[in-house]
Amino acid sequence: MKLSFKYPSELKLKAYLKKQSLANFNYDQQYGTRNQEVKGYDNDLNSIFLGKGEKVWNNAKVALEHWQQFPPGWTKIYKNATALEAGNTVLVLFKLFGIWWSNSARIVYTLNEEHTYGFAYGTLTGHVESGEECFWIDKDAEDHVYYHIKAFSKPDFWAAKLAYPLARVYQRKFVRESMARMKKISAIPASENVS
Image (cartoon, rainbow, N blue to C red; front, side):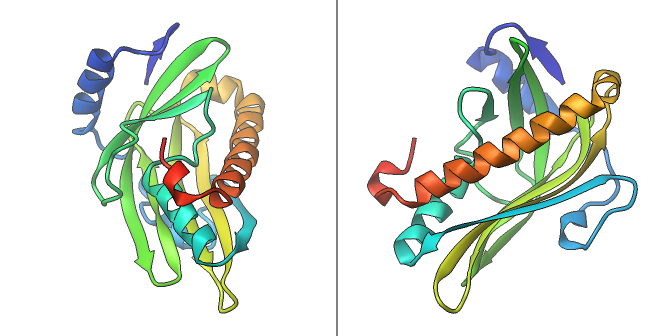
């Protein structure tokens, strides 16, 4: 984890990403988001109905491919052009109390089936939390499209442990805003969907 009072420069982000691409996971339960519950962690599952039809499905898929489920303003992914492939590493940046917190995560697995699409990433050594998060969409036989976030996490840094209740508030804020963002994105023309 790195801290900065302003958004880090491209040079600093690139260097930190390169370093973190060699880091190990800071938890032992890889693929845990495929299971019902991971003991010893906070387990969360949230879902929202996005809409119906192929347009909604395609828009939501493009949004996930470009990491657009992250609420703008206080969260960012570096690089948001990172391909959704197991083993790829990204930096997850959050702005809290005027400080940018840079953490690293690695894609653990992907979902790419006819009616399911998404991925899970896990936290790496030095991340403020430890755990895994899965973002995916699916559609049922009536073409209803849903967006889901499943995660298990616990604090892995002394400040996060001290501010545990606040960390949970921000996790819930992230979920609410991510759900709202995906709902909005899924309803717009695909040509306007990539930012």
